[in-house]
Image (cartoon, rainbow, N blue to C red; front, side):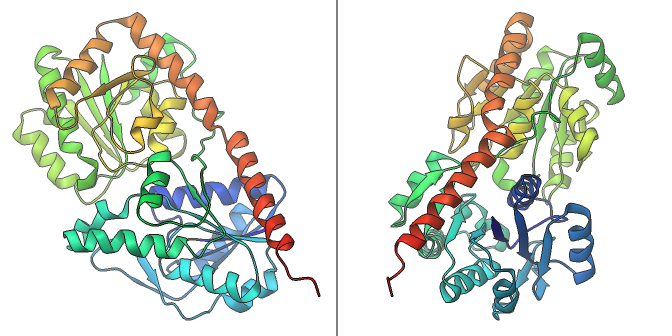
Length: 395
């Protein structure tokens, strides 16, 4: 199958959508498909380097840096991909973002008669504060714009049922189904023994029990709630540590908060990690905490699940679908740092429960394995391609 993937964000940019688009391109290539990625990058040389390393083609379109959102780039909607798309002759187009590059996908698909699959990854209205546009009318417009874009696709995918339902309520008319993000469960896995766990902990300067948050350090993630919960738990468990894995615009504020609350020496800010170092950082901890109210299906939680971590999280958006209360963790009341601390301490104080929840997380993670999710994606592609040809007029 020949598959064209369009995304306004792609590595080396660091965010969940970029990672999801990259992992999908990589998995499809590994299964023998011919993949071409259309995206924005700083230079064509960087695109060529990614192509050579990964085995799939990467085409970059003219773009500029977005001043209001450091690290992000915006493409010019000028139809520059049309000739490349025509030469590549894809069987299907998969678009991951509804912005400039996404409109290139819609334009190319409509003009060339190629079926279009669109994935909507997140609740964009929760991110408007980044561009100083967080108002009621802009949130309403955000949904209207997003649904208007995806109504031009032949099939729409959403990583969680909550996002799919929200899109239908907002006016989506096209068929929509859920397709979860996936993880490499052979790479993200639990430590082999208690001794190995102790060694990994020691490598990060953790001598005893520890909690972890991983993800983009941004206001919509409500990481301040996690730190406040840690402060409460730390008063009762003095040796307790908190590891914050990731980077983002809120990092300095979070370091300042930890300092003001008197726990700076017990909070480890690792910055952005990847590869084996990321796996070991997760393995070094005992429980994953998140208080985010804007998540869809974050890869960070799937990775933590795969290494066998129990969870304490709020029952919001896609998070409510990722954990089973009392099976691999506990839900805490949204915005209640005390309840989050209490639930974390409850798990930490019962080794049998800690192990039971961790084992359950690993079992649940297998449902998000790369092979399972990629096979489902292939079936979706086959379906939209078949339907497109069935609807062609008979000459």
